[in-house]
Length: 271
Image 1 (tube, one colour):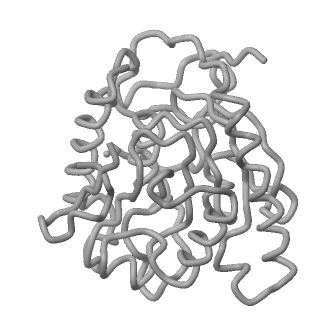
Image 2: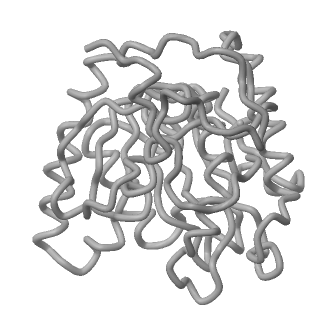
């Protein structure tokens, strides 16, 4: 399958995003650290007023497998780590069943800050935060991205189809500038108290080694010069393929743990 720029689902949105020419793992990590530093100081949406900690992500910055969930909860907000509650324990167990550990993958969320009361993310919050996620995908270079639940799946597919229809079905998608094998899964939280959902999630997890063995999809041909943030869309790329929501475009880490303070050095496993 040949992937071209015209299949792009979610674009890069600012001129300052890392160059496609970045191939060194060291370079990518350094750029990922810079994105983290930007995210931890982010005040682009009202969530910065109520958060305790920015939860940027956790795991292996060279991972072939990336998981993307919805948003941090109370425990995540307190510790600065994604998936540290009961859903995280289930995720760890499912990874163990296919021979992987948390340190082998990278885990992030569509939002980097906790919505008050664990409410659903608002469209403007997803839009404001998505460029951080695009930068993570570009710099980590995963082969497979597992979206956990509806919010991450709908965002990265730029489509409203629900997880119940899509789970366990892989497809090649271009996320920002990188082609990945996208693999929607039920969110572990949905499987905690529903045995049937847990069995479906476990069954879908068993396919992950097979998908990783396929390798990375063919990458898109490099596009032309980057558009400045306020430039009109390229004429050959429909707006529907460039935007998930009609919102203002937002600006956007060795095993690495990126944290605001030295005593939180386990957050990302990046440094």
